[in-house]
Each structure stands twice: as C-alpha cells, then as structure tokens.
Length: 158
Length: 179
Image (cartoon, rainbow over all chains, first blue to last red; front, side):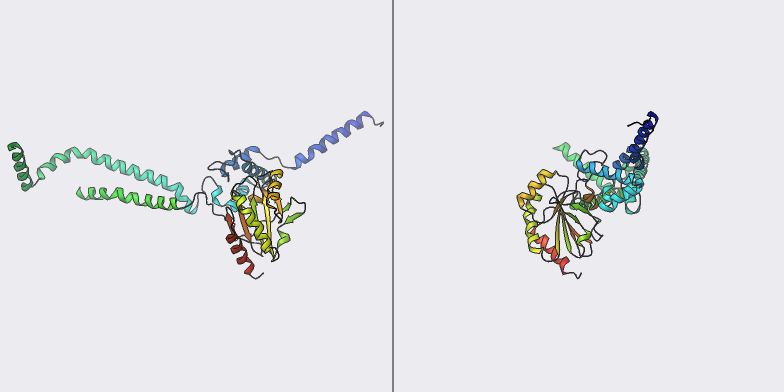
C-alpha cells in the first residue's frame, strides 16, 4: 500500500460520506411529529391512554409505524387517516369536528348557555319575590279562614 | 305566576328524560366492543415468513376462502380454548378450497413455538414481529379471527375465542358463494 497520505485522506472522507448517505436518504423524521400524532391516537390495548403515553408493545409498534409512514413522505394527516381507515374513528381520542360528532363539541356550550339563562331567570324571580309574598296572603278564601279559626279554637279548648 | 310554576314543576322531570334515554343506550352497549370498519373491505395484503420457514402471502390464496386468526401464547384462556377448534376446523376444511393462517402477534418466538407444538397445529403460522399486519387488520387484542371470501374481501370478524359453530357457519357461508 503506497498511497500518498492525501489520497488516503480523500478515501477516508469518501467512506464517511458514503456511510452517512443512507441516513440522509431516509428523510429525518421529527420525533415531535411522531409524538404529536401519537397523542391523538388511542392505544388499542389500553383503556384511555394515547399511543404516545402507553408503554405497551402494541403502542410501541404503532409509534414505529407512524415513524415509518412519515419517513416514507406521508403527512401527519395521511398517517392519522391510515389508522382511522383500519380502526374507525374510535382510534381518535377527540372525535372529529364534523357531522354527528359536532354535537359533542356544541352541546356543552349550548348547555352552558341554557344554564346561564336559567340562572339569570331564577335570580330575577327571587329578587322580585319579597314584594309578591305579602300580597299573596290576603288571597285566602273565607271558608279556609273560618276553618282555621274553628280548629285553633278546638286546640285551645282541649 | 302560577303558569310559570306549573312549567317549572315539569321542567326537571322533562330534562331528565334525554339523560335517561342516553344512559339506557350507553349501558346497553359494550364499551369493549369496537366496531371494525373493515368488514366488506378488501383484506390487506401481507407476506410473512412462517415459523416453519416458507413464506405465505394473501395474494397466493386468492380464490380460496381464507380464515386469518391472530393469536399470542400469553393469551390465556381464550387462545388456548380456541386452538383445538382451529385445528379441527383446518382438518375438516383443508381439502375444500379453504386456507387457515395463524398470525402470532405481540409475542416471542420461543413461547409461540411451544404453543404450536402443544396443540400440534398443522396449518401455517407466522409471526408479525413489527405489528404491521395486525394494524393493517385493525386488530386491538387477541384472539381475533377474520373470514375472507374468495374475492379477498373481509366478510366477518370474530373477537374472542372461536367455537366450532362460529368457524363452520362462516366458512360454509363463504364456500357456498360462487367463485
């Protein structure tokens, strides 16, 4: 081996570049994106844990599939669509804001609105009541008043 | 005033009705029963290396009724209950254009092979180490069994241990269909 040092250095540099090539070719997958998608997907073997949070092997495999699909050039939306295609909307931890599922997003606010209206209505009625109560007492009919008098007299006598 | 109190008397029971209806519906559904969107859809292609060595792919089985069973050796008791059923079903139907494929998921090779030896399975079984096939089939637990028609469509899915009746009813139904 009688290569001049410079050639050997160039060869070494070439080797380093070639070793790095496969890593460059596989588009770097952002782990934050993997995690982001994982938090929106339900871990299929656990109750109410996301794929990002579950330590189970299945969730691990699902994270690997997410990573793989991102590396293949899919967008996060496409990756999520793949899981929905296989597992249905059940796989999404938040129901999508469309169609019937829109109810889930709207009803709490409608309920809150109705509750506020009810509270306002009740508070107004209560604040008017002191005036209304004394006015109500003289409305007792004569027969009832007589009966009360009679019965109180009975009590006094006994 | 009396009109509004009468309305108020009915408001609470009336408001309870939708809640009761919702609860009545909710308590009747099984929270673990997850509807699969895959029934009626083409079964995802796969190519796996069986424990015995040769590869098996869904494309190679087109024209036959295919039963795919996802299992694991740690899945006790359901997978142990259905293992003899599967072997019986395989022996009864293997000469009638039916293929049974076992796919071992979330498992290790050693215990999986011990499981196969214990039950003397003679149908092909393959591991799915990366879980790709199980996600392609929307599998969320073991055991799950898919019945695929001759055209390669998933026609039924059974969650939990398969019984002789479930196995033959599904296979007979798909066999009766003209190719």
